[in-house]
Image 1: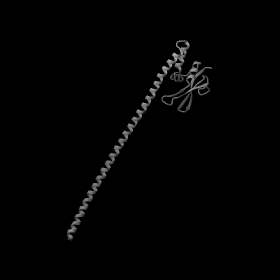
Image 2: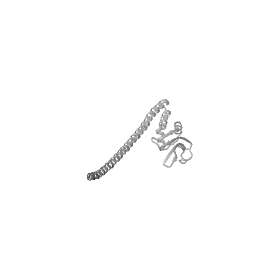
Image 3: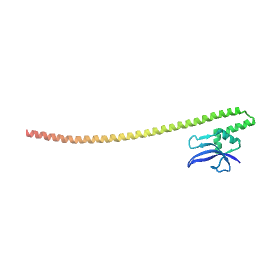
Image 4: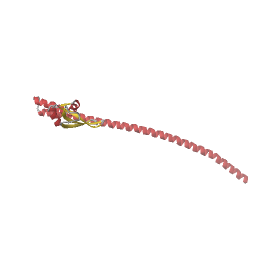
Length: 188
């Protein structure tokens, strides 16, 4: 029975979620499998990979062939490198302790790369949010300035109209006072 380590698609349309399984190569993609080894969620950045390291390594040493995508995932998590180191131990090129030390060193570097990527993504997100906030603030200030200018024009027009109305009312009042004073002088 030729075994393969491959992805089994789950999730809804345009939102895939994969199970990493050991399955017979003749079985359908989402069909019968021997063992579920982990999960892979590509919908987030960086992708979430939950993998049973020991079982994946077991299936690789048992002769299961990973598909291209599954090989990339296993390589990313270090399963392929550990399998390579174990082959070196079997050949007598190194001891198990030396192989484990090499793997631990590699894993520290890999974790640092992942942490740097996550912090870079967080930094980029914060910068994008700050730029969006700055743009929104500029637009808000521009609208407020336009609104204030429009209100100032309307207030100036209203003040001018009021002044004209008072000026027009003042000559009428002076004419009315003059008539009243002429009436007073004629009566007297």
